[in-house]
Length: 379
Image (cartoon, rainbow, N blue to C red):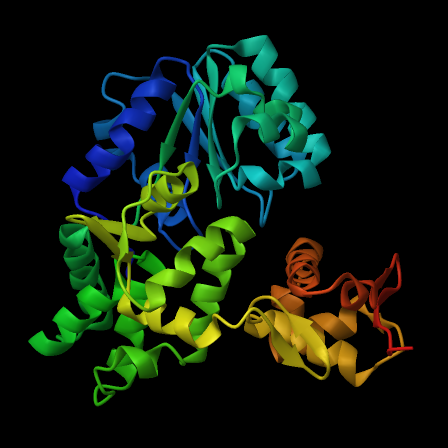
């Protein structure tokens, strides 16, 4: 697929201009954005296109380095880049910062260099959820408030940005949607970048698909997007969303409501608010039952395809230890050796464990260090 700008030059400048303005002054920034909102992909595109970076960092000699913690570079590689940039100011982008606690050696390396080179070394930390300042230091000493002098939310795309992104996908797919389909995707996506992409691909492959938000809410790929979105929110924020499945709600003034607004999950309209997407509203209506039951196990949220494959694999071997390789094959099938990583598997295991509704069910999901996992039969 062709690599096109994810947003227009004006949008890139409006969204990232203040962020790079802070880092150019030696300040560090924390950027909160929900999974699939496009923050990582957009920032990665900027860092890989010098002409875009030059607009955001005019007259700056600052170097930029991206650390993707899903596929992190070796500590030695990072240290070499920092050492080679000794005479230049440097900004390191950490995606995603809420995983630093799982990479202690990397955190220590970054902290050591930061204290030696501040303000010539600054950071942009990306988060997949909102984490209050008082919890950041608990999660990772590098994230203490004094280091994080600026913060920002990466909101879902607005209408103009959505139209721009859809036009980019039409160009990539070499297609032209009928106006009715184009308008439908524009409204139904709600500006969530990954949903814009998914709907464009869906209607490209299935041009006769009915324009029906209720039916689309049951499509597995879309359900997986929404389940991942919800998994980034604490329970008390999820509960704020449920009343929107029946009617728009009066604007709330609570901090949690404001956070959901800042993400773009809730949009204000006059004296009331609504959820960002009609498909998401239908999805919540279908899944607002507090519990989903599978083989006698109860879950607080729908399982993603990876979590479902993990659970099925363990249930098929009830009472027996299943190796990590066996689990990897169950999740990623014939491509498991290319897609497998310990970090990715541990993330799926962690998310599945969180979704068990009761402590008793959660205790039946046992990790055997160095061996694998086991789902115990009920006593």
